[in-house]
Each structure stands twice: as structure tokens, then as C-alpha cells.
Length: 334
Image (tube, rainbow, N blue to C red; front, side, top):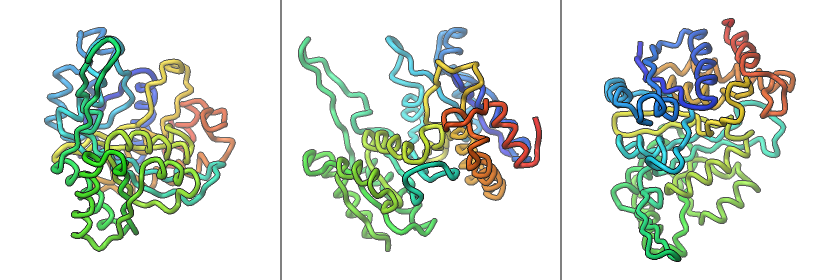
């Protein structure tokens, strides 16, 4: 059994976390959850978005499943997600972009895995107020951090027999920073027998909505990765359908990439698919691929039927009704 830190989060987080727990239990996943929350609910009680108990749990278990957490406005740090990535050097943000079910979409050949550098670029948050009329934000790209994310993408491509790696930059304009990232990619590519493609980020955005099937493994910088992964989610049904994981050298936090949706919290309208598929990535990584694929097949079966879709996908099922439908497919019940 693996002990995994469960961070339910804010807004719809507790609802979708409960659904995921039920489904994992139904397939006898060898996971024991240690539940330690973070976010606005904890802040109201303890005066901190990230309690010490959470750090202790993460540092002990090294694995976590996380729901959405509201970013504080007007005080505190930029976001809980960014803070955890920085503290534990979770430099790989990996987001598989592949349809989880047969939904009414324009494309049926989307199958890419996006590797986003998670710790530098403009998201390093190095900003300076020059005057009331001028502000600067510094873009930071280093050889070391570029190489490790690019090499991670190539290692993944090699390990899973993917056909190519596409490197996304804006090196024609940002010749120093993006130029460095691209130069490092060209050097790393020499170590692998895998074709590397180069593309500018604006063209990448256009190509993804015209012919996404041409892309396989994609690696890019922090800001571009954030934008392109959301664009990719739009190709397969929205943010409620895309899983993700933040990985470092010895820790991984699996998370749904959508927001906390406080406007629908407590109304039974949340779609738990993204968090459930993130849990499937966790199962893959602990050697339980068979159970993960069993859950994925259930998601495909349920969501491919228009009568058993959640409201965000054009259906009418509540969170509990959708969870029940999945439980029936995997062999459990509420």
C-alpha cells in the first residue's frame, strides 16, 4: 500500500475528491490517503494557506493528489500551486492531452503530451515597479533548468516509443532567453534517436487548432506551456477533462488543472474527471497501470454516451449521478 497525501482543496475540490476516493476504493487501488487540506478554508481557521502539517505530510509521503485551490487575491503569495512547485522544485509539469471519451469534437486524432518547465521564465515572479507609469517583469531562462525539462521530454518519448519531440519557443524575437532554451534543445536532441521539431509559439497555437494530430511530445517554457495546455484542453472537452502532474527529483503532486469554481461549489455540478484521470497517472507511476486503465475505460464508456455526461459536457448528470455511473462500470456502488 502507498500512503498518498490528499489535498482536497477549495470550492468544488472536496466534492470531486470524494468522488475520486469512491472510485479508487471500488477498484481496490492500493492507496491509503492521508488527508491534509490547504487553501482558503485552512486560511480562515489557521491563518495560513499552506499549514505546516501539509509540508510534513508531503515530505514524508513524496506523493500527493491535489484538488483545485483558490489563488489568494490582495494578500499572500501568487498561488498555492506556484509555492509548492518552488519549494519542492517540481520542475516538470506534465499534461497528457488526449480524448478520454468519444465526445462531439472536431478532431479525433489528438494525442500529445505536454512538458512544461515549471520553475522559471516569467513565472519566477521577478518584477519591479519603475514608476507609476512603468513596470518591468524579468524573463529568466537558465541552461540547467532548460536541459532537465527537455531531457525529461526526450526520456519520456524514448520510454513510450513516441514519434517526435516538438520544442516551442519565440526564439526569433527573444533571442537571448528563448534562444538559449532552443540551443539547449538542439544539444540534448543529439543524444536521442528521436526527431525534434522546432516551432514558434504563435504558429504552434494556430497549428494546434488546425491539425493537432501532427504533435506528439511537446516541450516548452513555463508561460507558453500554461497557455498551450489550456488550448489543448479545449480540443478534448475543456479543463474538466485534462489531468496533470508536477514532478521533481523525488516528489510528485498529481492534480486537476482546472480552477476551484466557487460559483458551482456545493451544487453537485462539478465534473471530477480531471482529478480522477490525475489519480490514474498516479496509479501508472506506482505500477498499477491495469487499475488505471480499468478506470479510463469506465470514463470512456460513461462519457461516450450523451445520456451519462455531466453538465459541462452537455449532459444532465450531477456529480453523484456521474460517480454512480462510473462505479457501476468499474464494479462498485455508492
